[in-house]
Length: 295
Ligand SMILES: C[S@@+](CC[C@H](N)C(=O)[O-])C[C@H]1O[C@@H](n2cnc3c(N)ncnc32)[C@H](O)[C@@H]1O
Image (cartoon, rainbow, N blue to C red):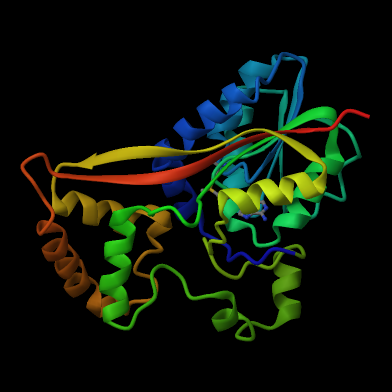
């Protein structure tokens, strides 16, 4: 069972409004998966359903899409959108990608995880489950953060500043949290899913991803790392963006009376690399398409 801390409606809504990067990446991923009319599609970590609405058009009214996510609030938002648009080929449920036991073997033509895989600790389990629910010849697609590749420099700079002050970036880890809440009350409240912290990351290398996939029985059709460049007009813009992204999780470990001090310190640090074009940063994403061997 994956650990994940629950989020509020406001946090889920905020993700919906600040997920252009993930959405654009998902447009490429679903195109490369060549999702066809009448396909059956599983979306693991469907979030607030932005990409689902696009996939609804790809599969047409005779196709079927099933989206799962650990976050009940994101699933609520996704369901509401599908209802408003009368997208009857879409359905959503709270669920964990490492436990698809409610789903039949060999049912889906395509399974994808867009910007989700690096949040999942048990890589082998999620690949096994994807493999089991795919039809022979069905395809898995995912995008993920990667290790061994220089990461998003904005994040690295911010992390160093917080670390120098004795704070963690974003959230505290699972171990810090576990034990502070009685297990049974969490289990009752969250329908058996443990929500421990937002956005813990477990990125892997390209070679590890390939090895896991091949061990599971997939044929890797494409695996590559792509660069994404983002421009900010000023240091203030960068700092607002990092503080607001990840569901305002960024300063979670910092006492609120220290927020403005840390914010100013971040701005001062980013000023050092600001040019008259503002600040450019690059992040890297792994794109993978793999096929389940035909019998
Ligand atoms: C960065 S968001 C991406 C959401 C969506 N795929 C998109 O493209 O906008 C990561 C999502 O993965 C979900 N998630 C993380 N671990 C998961 C797991 N084990 N099973 C299902 N969903 C998971 C989170 O709740 C979150 O909504």
